[in-house]
Length: 554
Ligand code: NOJ
Image (cartoon, rainbow, N blue to C red; front, side):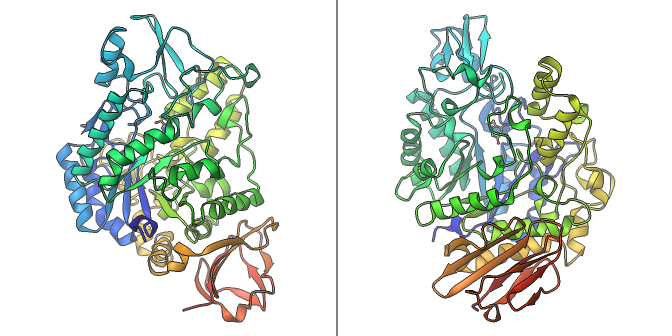
């Protein structure tokens, strides 16, 4: 079995992980210092959010030099040292490949802007007319440039111009850059918005009924997408023993299989957004900020769809959190009196499925969302949306907007890691770039490591189970009692071997009847977030957010 199928990935958002030099911003040396901590947790791979030279308009997802480490994070030598030290501990390093767009401060764009005849003009999309496409970060996706009297395309901020993959010279530059890092020992890539690299170059307008600046089907899965990815595979990826995960908003099972289907020779897996969008009102004129209650049955159906849809055909990535998503216990659970039980419950649900699980930094200690004043946030998405929706267009009240930010704003996940209960949570000796979550005294790594019942040690067990038990990586998946509105339960099965997860998704104590086809006397408890479990024959009495894992084999 390929190593990445048995692996658990830990995502580091370098800015917020650990600051070794006291400037208030995390850095590469800070990550190297904490490798023993990650090794103790038992993870196999670190995915590093971008660490390259960048003006940081979107915290490094706007790269101005792909071969150089951003000086605030350290030097290239620091990066090589991190790779070496990680490898000594059998931890692999996956970097973030942000090549749908570059920074407007990249040499290519600076040249491209100079004139219509410049050899780099075609590295980007320049047009006389703009269409009605919207940017993910508010407003139009086109910016007018007076020097040459044309517009350029930017699906994200105007400092993130989209690269033109139609141009083979650009593609070759990307292949060379990837090889540069892989020769330094990098073990793979997380490919940022990779579903958008091929454009519909006739730039069709969206239907006017979709609002002023729509985002929709033309923003992803363009006509040459899979041709480009296959070329990347042939030119680069096939030459290394590496792993790849593509961020692919707008994917269905069918197009997921085009990325990661067996024999496709493209990517190993993708991040789908399906389950993360279940608490958003679709096609709302206020975009992602229109948040609704999650329906548990929708979530179960969605996991079933992906677990079964890719079974034996592709491979799933499993996640609830990352640097773009809020903390799951604050979003869908209880981050107060049942914070610990709840964090373990979400971990159980996710980690017993088939796929490669991703733990986002701080998830393993149950970090929670941050409720700040608008001025205290840093995220360009939050700031732009506030200006657009609240101040300019006035289609959301400040209160409604802030409530949405508290639920799903990206800075919820970007607050610095709470290492201990000293000043600044031990993250920095300087002034942190983003305010530390006020509950750091209660929620921190030092505390977690001293408490054998902590979320940290529970995650450690979940990771160890995946390493030890092939059933978790290989078995089929089926929901148990799909219609149940309170319980998330499923079975993983190979032949007679069966593993069952039963999780109370809510606070209310509740009985759950395991269907009669399961002979509970043959099952034993292998992990749960309470002491033991309570049952009378097949009726299991679940406490708030209780999650149990049972199996019928040794
Ligand atoms: C997805 C990244 O995860 C996000 O943080 C970023 O803002 C956009 N892509 C643009 O690169």
